[in-house]
Every structure is written in structure tokens, then in C-alpha cells.
Amino acid sequence: MKLFPIFADLKDRPVLVVGGGAVAERKTLALLEAHADVAVGAPELTPALAELLAAGRIRHLAGRFDPAWLDGAWLAVAATDDRGVNAAVSDAARARRIFSNVVDDPELSSFQVPSIVDRSPVIVAISSSGVAPVLARRLRERIESLFDHSLGRLAGLAERYRQRIRAGHPDLGARRRFYDWLLDGPVAGLLRQQRPQDAEAALQAALAQPLAPAEGSVVLVGAGPGDPGLLTLKALRALNEADVILYDRLVSDDIMSLARRDAERISVGKLPGEDHHATQARIHALLVEHARLGRRVVRLKGGDAFIFGRGGEELEHLRAHGVRYEVVPGITAALACAAYAGIPLTHREHAQSVRLVTAHCREDEDNLDWPALARERQTLAFYMGVGQLELLTQRLIRHGRAATTPFALIENGSRPEQRVLSGALEDLPRLARAHAIRSPALLIVGEVAGLAQSLHWFGEHLEGAPQRLAA
Image: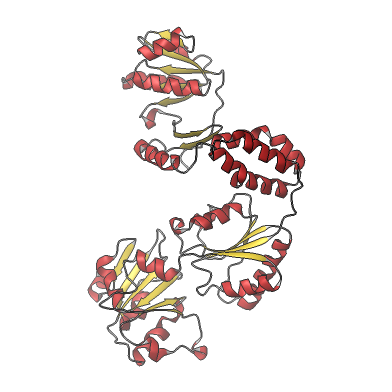
């Protein structure tokens, strides 16, 4: 984090604005909104600043900048069109350990003024650390559309009733559930309908009734392949409401960073060589244990829980033990990895069907229908197959798949470190070794995989041709 975000209480505290033009005017008005004691230092003032001075809302320090103007100030803003003056303000402020902002000049600034979404008392601030103000403004426009203007009234209502809510619900879990009801239920709806008196009456009625005991539940959430942008809105909401999160090894750190900060996080990922049955039994036990304690549990799985994720087994266990549950689907690896590699899984000219196959099995347990898998004009997506590339290649070619059939091996699909290796099926094991492909990786076999060479758009593409390897 380049900058540390803070919200400063400037009420009745002296703040210096250097400059008397339009930019200084905007900064002064924003500071007055925060009830700061604003002094404007400049030879001349705009008509609007002059009106503020006449109304007694600001003080005027006439003339060119004098470091003594900073005496007693908490913050300083330099808003002149003279970089030499702005630099002098910055230097003098730094010498006095006063934070200063030089408008549109991050190098001279010790703090940045963010773009604001104002739903007072709720304030959302967006900063690009001073490097791309236009981007920050665009983000502000997007966020503005997400929050109804009644949000401020709702926050104000919660503030007025805060002590009564705490007294009525001393238990933290119960109090959190009450706030969830307040934010998502009829009170918020009445405020959106511009019925503040009815909203307050609904809140008072709720406080007069005892809160029902918490009922624990489990949400089975598919986290997708790793890119946090591929999470569904329901998945994000579940992560922010969770009391406990049981997450797999392949769930990315970027996705975990979106979860509620105070949620208990339990890693339940299976590692190679472990007894997976014992690990799954522990997961089942943890799900039931935490749900019976009245907690909201998120079972977070990479990809989609119902595609080679044992999601069905976990739901069966929850149902057998009377635990309420719901499912939030995720984007499975075959869909995401193929899309991020530029590979259409179906194509009118090349493939009319798709097969999702787990390759995570030993040779002596091989019970796949290889003749069916070796047929042409279909796409095969092999999960967990990096350690089985020799076996997969041999079986497919032996049962009739052409040795020249294109493949694409997608490592860390959808993540910043994504690599896509493509080539002919007969060369797959050798090329994977040459490029040191590691798990997690998904293998796509079929004519459509050849399109990765021309349609790739994300991450690094590794051409499997021998001359490229030699280079």
C-alpha cells in the first residue's frame, strides 16, 4: 500500500489553503464541508471566496506565501499555478511536520485528496495514490450508482439507536444479526421510499421484540479459478457475511482478501500424499460443529463445488445432520481457463461436445472409457492431470486419437502468472517437462486447442513448436 488511508476530523481545526483561484475555491468549499477553520492565503480572491470572507466563513491572509502562515495549522493545501510557490509550501509544511497537498503534484504532496462518494455520515473515498486522478473519478462515478442516497439516513438512524441496540443485544453475534436485518430489511426499504417516520417505527418495534436464537447454516461457495473478478455477487456477499470460512488450498489470496476481516479462517486444503478420506471427514465434522454453534459458515472451494469438488458429499452430510445450507456456483476451471487462453470449448467446425474428466487416478485404478474419449470432434478438459501427462497421452493415442491432435496446457489459469503451453498431443509430456509446468494446471485436448496460438489474449503463451524451444 503506497498510501495509508485515514479520515481526518478537521472540525474547528486550522487549515491553510494557499491560492485564490478556482482550484483553491473548490478545495476551500470541500474543507468547509468538513467544518474546518480555513485560512486562504493569496494576493487576491475569486468572487466566491470573497463572499465566504464577507460572511465570516474563512480568513484571508493577503499577499504572497509566508511560512509563518503555517503556524498552528493541521493541514495545508497548495493550489496556485506557480510550482515554485507550491514547492515552498510543501517544503515549509514538511519542516513543521504538517501534512500538505499540492494539487495535481503527487511528488510535492505528503497526502492526497481522494475522490468522494458522500452518503454522510457514510463516506467512500477513492484514491489512485495521485498517479491517475481521472481513474479515481471514474471509479467514483461507478460507486455512486451502487449506493442509494437513503444510505446516509440509514446510517444516521443506526447511530441514534446504537446504545439501545447494544443494550438490547449484548451478544456480539446477535447484535451483528440485528444490524444485518437493519441494513437489509424493511427499515432500509422504507427509507428508500422516503418514509423516514415509518422506518423509525419499524426499528423501534423490532427493538421491543426478543431476537430469535441464531440458526447456523452453511453456504457452499465456488471461488472460481483465482481471478477475484470472476466471483459472483452472491459469493462476495457470502464472504462478507461469514463467521467461519473453510477454504481449500487452491483458493487465491486475492479472493481471501475480500472476506470479512474478523471471520475465522480454517485451511482444509488437501495435500498430495495425505489421506483424503480422513481430511474430508474432518471437513464434514467442522461444518456441522460450527453450524450447530449458530455460525454462518462458508465452505469455499476453488472453481465450482459440484465439478470434482466433493460438494455433493458435503451437502449429503449436512442434510443428514439437519444443517441448513445453500449453494453459490462458481466458474469451473474448464470454462475459465479455456476463456482466458482464447479457446472456445465448442466450435461449429471442430467440436460439438465437451467432456470434463478428472485425471487424478493411479494407473492400476484407471477406469476411464478411453475409446469414447479418443473420438474426434469433441473437446476434453482434464482436471488435476499434470502428474498424469504420460498416461493420458499414451492412452489417447493408443485408442485412436491422432498424435497430431492439438493440446493446450493452462497453468494458473486466470491468475497474473498464467502460462499457456500448446502443441501436438504426441509432444505433450516432453514440452511440459521442458517448460516446467506445475499444478494447478488444466489440460485441454481437441481441435479447438489449436486456436490458442491465434486467439490467446491473457498471460504468457508458450508455443510448442521445436524451433521456438530451441530459441
